[in-house]
Amino acid sequence: MAEPKHPVSTVDRTFEIVEVIRELDGAGVSEIADRVDVGKSAVHNHLNTLASREYVVKEGDEYHVGLAFLGLGAYARQRNDIYRVARPEVDQLAEETGELVNLLVEKNGLGVYLYRSRGDRGVELDTYVGKQVHLHSTALGKAILGYRPESEVEAVLDEHGMPRQTESTTTDPGEFFEELETVREQGYAVDDEERLTGLRCIAAPVTDDDERSIAAISVSCPVHRVSDDRFFGDLRDAVLGSANVVELEHNYS
Amino acid sequence: MAEPKHPVSTVDRTFEIVEVIRELDGAGVSEIADRVDVGKSAVHNHLNTLASREYVVKEGDEYHVGLAFLGLGAYARQRNDIYRVARPEVDQLAEETGELVNLLVEKNGLGVYLYRSRGDRGVELDTYVGKQVHLHSTALGKAILGYRPESEVEAVLDEHGMPRQTESTTTDPGEFFEELETVREQGYAVDDEERLTGLRCIAAPVTDDDERSIAAISVSCPVHRVSDDRFFGDLRDAVLGSANVVELEHNYS
DNA sequence: CTTACCTGTTCTGCTCAGCCGAATGGCGTT
DNA sequence: AACGCCATTCGGCTGAGCAGAACAGGTAAG
Image (cartoon, rainbow over all chains, first blue to last red; front, side, top):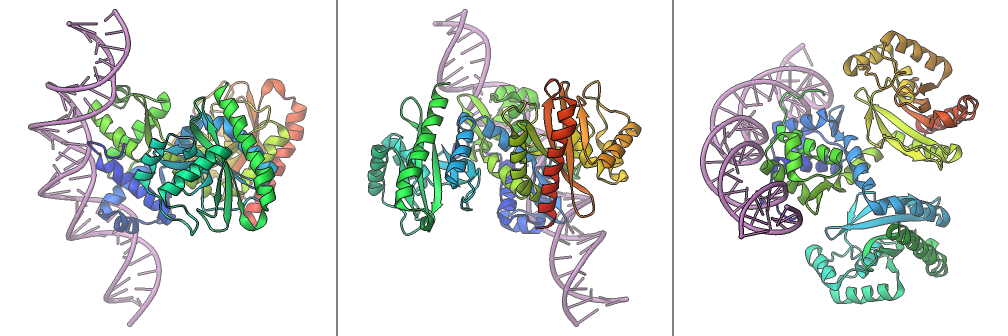
């Protein structure tokens, strides 16, 4: 659903306001009014309406995103089958490897992080649960697209493009399709500093009965700390194992 | 913020729609229109506007709460200091005790669950992260109110009342203040089937430098499975210990 | 202390956004 | 084939939400 036939502009404005607050990490009425390009009074009315339901909270004279969204967000995630079965597995994988483990699903051609679990040495990243990312520049995304029909991959690339993130990002569709071929052959996907310099990830898809991907699980670690031996050895096996467990539990229960 | 001076009714309607979808666990246009008391076309316009931003998703001909809320919700929680320091401690407590462990904060006179962790024997409950509850009928709420000035407790009771939840719920303010006195003496609060029949909880407050509560941690378990010995022994000590750790980490780091 | 300049908030009147109701179209069921 | 039950579209009317200006409170500078 890209463009509704009869959009309710007030709804758009409301969420623009909330999203601006998040981007600015808290903001006042005037600041928001500038960004959203509506008058202060309108912004004020919106904020107070939102505040009455705790969707935003006023702290001093800054407005912040409220915890009411937490209820809806947690509910939306909980409804997700994959999340329910994958979560314990992701936790265990993080504990075993000590690294950062991620669970990603695809929504409208973009990846959405559903869950993350950090082992005791796991890196801190710019990603967070709920964040949307392009699929072409992460191991997770490649694992997902590798197990989708070619036509669908093309549609995704058409819609969202292949923006360059680092020097190593693949930005050529032809090359990308070759990579996906490799992913299918190997059963896993790798991202070597393609989204973030200094970070490499290895990801495995979770597929349904028809070999269509429904999610992906990855381990992320700093390049300087992990040898190829461990990366393509223990880590690879662990990720593949976990994805397989999730797959089985999801499809046969 | 109870009643804004100039409410934006479209905003209210939008969130009413989303909340109805959650209550019904997915719903169609007509179904929602009945509940919210607006025409089908209006509901339709709202839904499609929301869907264009992934705040709702259309599955077949049912609309569901979308994962876009997850980003905002997770962000709102992450901003919360208490959450950041308490989370690992809550996880550990759940693992040690095997029971359900909860983290609650107060927002506008109501309790909001910030986090929950279920041990291997932990009960399933009607609570979920983000849910709001009255403070007078839970161990968590009593732990929080016990470490707030009397005037504030009165304000909370005035605003939200003391609705009865079970036979054991305290509904008399005088009696309630005596209970809070006991909480302060003991340093922990107990809920013996006051919110839910068959469930008992024990909670400890997390306070700031001025002995003012900022959150509470509890362990919940079925009455039939836990002896008084364990409840007022190991469980009590574990909860108090965890709350204390969180308190120290929060105040001195 | 005064002045100036930020904020957030209130108020009023105008305009167009959003609503209702009716019509349309798509599916399944009888 | 004809009905019933949906979601969706459309047009025309009405009041909701907007801009802009005025007000209030707080802070910094003169």
